[in-house]
Length: 368
Ligand code: SF4
Image (tube, rainbow, N blue to C red; front, top):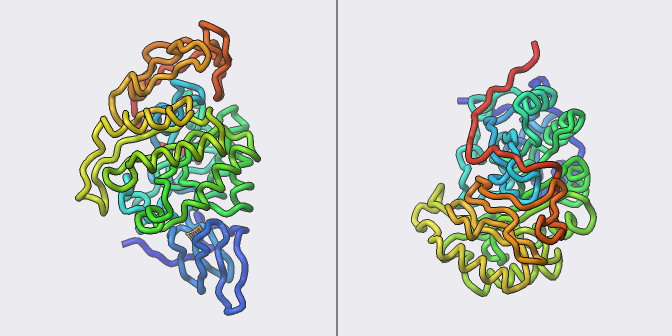
């Protein structure tokens, strides 16, 4: 069993900044809206932040739950350096408590020491460069809770021309959010449903706070972001809820924000719910398009028709995509339609990558 005691003598435990003292002697963590109020030695809900020596510390700086090279389409990002490879990793813990978590072995881990390998920001950046990755991605669990580590990794990567991607539920307070996203190039935000009831009962978070993050990213940053909604049969897949989500996105973020509807598979505390039928993904895609979103994709299934990108002007299929593989590419190096010259939204820099479906587990070699 791992030792749960927090200590600044631990080389992976570092001080943090976003917290304040309360009149009753507790200290409140201000990173996310959970606002954990901590007594000495206590950990927050995310488990990796806690109070020691009268301050909030991060106990997972430089430790990861695994490294893997994936296609960027798996994050999922379809309009960010298409076809390129990404060095993906996470830590342990999470600030949400989703009953359907698809990475619960990592996000609910209480045994950081047995789970995690060491990886300094410099070693991660060097590994990404050595493997030819265009980006690193903080994924598997939510980087909100290990923001200090994530920002340092992003900075080390930027020095080598490698970009940083956050995969997050967007449940973060304004001040740390601004600090964190100033270091990020792209994000995929998990919009888990479009009712407060779902957020309260199933994720123990709040929809309003996530929508604030989406508006913030759109209107106050240059971060390229896409949105994912995992459709769970009977819980968030009604026509009305999908229509409401799409209408909100168009009105608040515009028609160009890509939306991915992905398929649920029974997991964690939701083993009694069936997998998402492919027809549900197609129905959601149709509804979202009818409400004006231009780039709506299906995910976690083979569906070339549902995963390809079309030019909004001439209708040409500019990226033929099946799951994570690009089968045909009709964009210029700058991301314009080869047929009519219309610029597609996103980040494009040269020919598309050819990483495809591969998933390559990686060991990080720390310098001696
Ligand atoms: S980041 Fe962790 S400790 Fe801080 S408020 Fe959120 S759940 Fe609590």
